[in-house]
Image 1 (tube, each protein chain N blue to C red):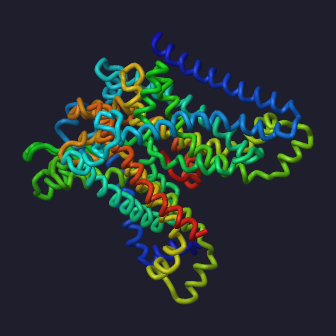
Image 2: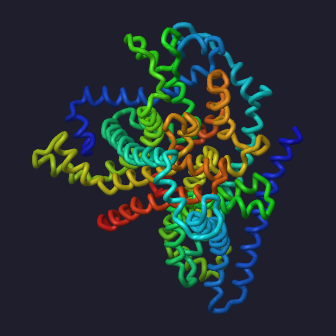
Image 3: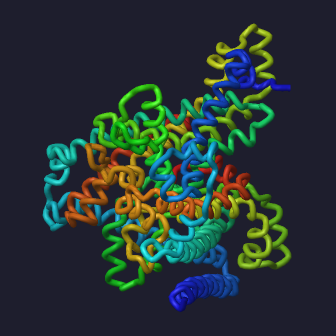
Length: 322
Length: 286
């Protein structure tokens, strides 16, 4: 009980301390404002921005630079310049498999999530139960990936043949006379079964963004196309799809970047065993379990390098549309 | 009525089929959660011997799993539940207010280089968390911070780029006349920010606040690195751990999963509108 009280005291203490910091910022801004000089307006702006700039510089930019530095050192993060760590990633079998898996994830998850999200957005558009139907698909977004993984672990639950199957998939398979499948251990398909979980989580995001884009298409455009005789599938291909292309790109990139860095699902469902590991999980393993900081740093840098082309493509696309 | 391109497309794929597909998708998306939810209320013996769907014909439910998961000595999720709350609240408030101040300065004061600064902060969104974690850990070690502080600070820092981006986009659309009129009346930036801007920004603050709340509550990576011990770890860490060590004990695992989900689901259901708005305004995160 006292422990609980202590924790809440720590929390309120932190909030109080933060209030003091804000008071300090506001106080300094006030003092600067009193100067009534020409530059006081500018100075006040600087005072307001300073905490964010300091936090980002000390907590994100500087650590990122250090990590990049470490990535080019030895495997344990010692100084010197070498490409050993990167060479390791591409040559050691323990890291090559996660690398390939990550590539599969980054292609499959965004595409599948977008297809499902778009199909669903189209199918429930302006139906009577639209809000409710969307909430069903969207709900997985609100829960943690750990929670989602446990939900799906139960769907994939495996019991040896003959025993009563309590996992939904194996129950269906055995009902139709098939042999139960140990989904998590059947390589290479186990990676696909893990991808299903991520698609399940991300489809709601895709649906929400694409649905908003579809609703933003002006009625006149649709009317004009219908007068010209386009209906159904053709209307969808020639009007809807081109109109929402920008949003599709945003969804693909956002989901792709999220997927690149995901490790919760794999860690919770298989722990990365049975050839299912991905780069983000290996980053965690190397940095915080094997204490090979250099290798960990190199994986982190590789994740960053892989994000870049996706982002650059996105920026170019957005500019072209603008 | 249904005049959108999508509505037309759906009808042309012929409405009965469109409805069937929509219902099938909705069922496929909901069944896994429903299955585990039903499981969490079944007895340990039932869970081990029969599938959750048999509960429809032979309903027998209990709260025992929740009681044991929350208060039982081996799991005691109540402790982790409190850790989750203690971690989440400051990790939402701190970046929200700091980002609001910074976005105000970038949008409505005239310090030199503010456009570049904004672009720079925006660009930091693409830096993966992973790139900052190891050195951050070393810095925290030197400062000898408690695990709670490590998590609060990390979440705050990682949230800032997106927060500044979203709040700034909202802030710059506020009418300039309002600011000018207040200036003419002799109001300083402090007064304008707290009396005029903050109240006007409620929707944007709510939207990002919910986003950040869900993100921090559901986070595993940051907590695993900075607060892995029982005294400080949030629910996600403990539930993930249970999935490894108590693999087959579905009576505890299912209840544990739903205990960790209940708060974000309530937040999501009650504030769905803001959450969706945040998503639609949102760019890249993390």
